[in-house]
Length: 338
Image (cartoon, rainbow, N blue to C red; front, side, top):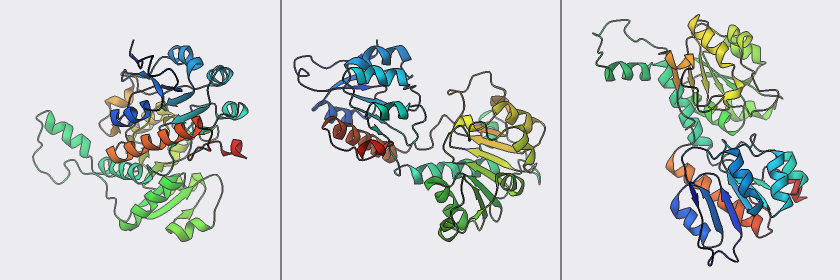
């Protein structure tokens, strides 16, 4: 079994940290000087039952977005020794945060640090989809080099177009700043209007329907919630321009992917670029994989070495603070600190 157990003698008086995926050996080595580590060493996520088996012996849990940390697991951990949970991600929708709050367990995450890295990647997806970069590269890799012609692999301009941002938190605002350099008109939608946003980014708040109707590019940056789950479906895709491109670096569950396939096949929209999917990994037989004008990447928007390293450091800071009884520095349920 892919499980790393420390020497029992040296670990005798150390708190135990259950870790659902290995990362940055140097950081884990430093953590092991203070804690006993139980690490799932495989690249694939651990089975739910593996977490359930070991959480009773854990004083702390480090988890990933792909792990389902539900109320049952949290209650089981809290009944035993669990004092703190921290996730190497900003979003915590896979964690039953309310259950953790009920048990007075702080839940850590990694806000802020991945904003610019994720916006960089979302922008690169938009550019790649607009200019058919991946489609062109795939042709060349298959020994297809079309003769130059006025319409060969023509794509869409980005400069001067309209960008619609669904969700206007840190990453949405970072996208708006990038759009300014391309002299784009920026529209945005989020649950409530905040007057200060216009002054910060020169973006204009509109309803979702207007955003979809007017935008040349629609990029999703909302948090996953009951209201945002499935928010882009057949009706919403039908409002978009036939030339529009959809980008998603938020959460896969915000899009009805069967409706997206149908919309692209019917030329309701022009293309899509997706870094997230539901479920993940994408099923190998999903029809979107067969479309040349759809780019799908494996949830890597925050995957620069510097950013992921800093996310790991923040996670360890959360864990050590929680184990020592201090307020954790990056807390997703700060109400427990009151």
